[in-house]
Length: 133
Image (cartoon, rainbow, N blue to C red; front, side, top):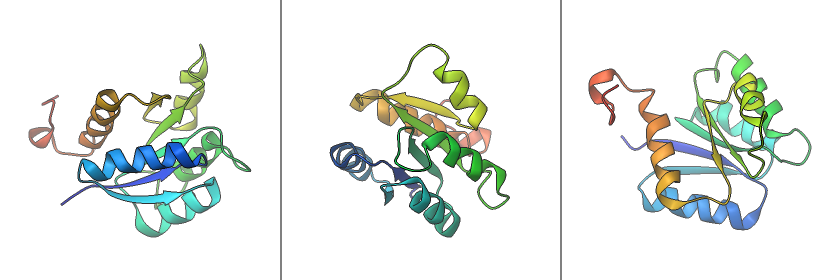
């Protein structure tokens, strides 16, 4: 079964690029342009992965991740932060919020899909993982 990925991104061009790359790779994609809608979609559809922009209007991506990781229904969902702010100390903040990884913007096609596949494989039994770890 094809993995379902929720993309929470408020910048139109970034949303378009990320979704195009994911759909071209065969993933089913859900979209939200703010954290509130992203949380609602996550609760309704329980995607395999959430790609969460950190800089969002209203509730930011780190707070949205904290809320998702606190809820029993969504705490198992892997969350990867999408950020243009990969400064020293930011990785620790993302991990503390519950992010399972991060992808720096601007997105590099090969690295992006590799990170998505690596994170999705964390949900698989060892014998089904791409990296066999």
